[in-house]
Length: 82
Image (cartoon, rainbow, N blue to C red; front, top):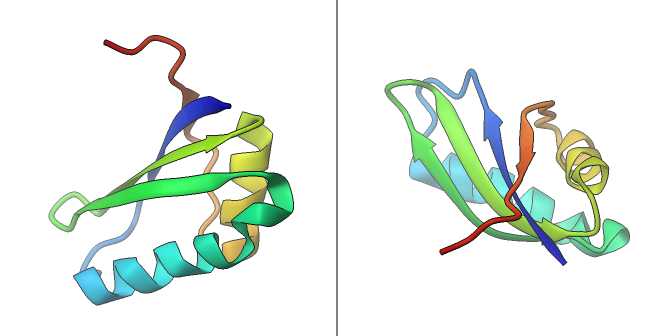
């Protein structure tokens, strides 16, 4: 499985609990696309959320996020790891 990092913008004022709820919405449907969201991070000052996932494709990651209610087009495959 490939690894992906995606970035969401506009998450100003979001709490840790709200981030956990958004992440759970991904987890609830991730198997539909063969994706697994491993971790999510929030920078409330910049309004950015970063998600680490594994899955078959960038498009699969994007479809799950869209269905979960927080779409993003900013998804990067991470083919090199050290």
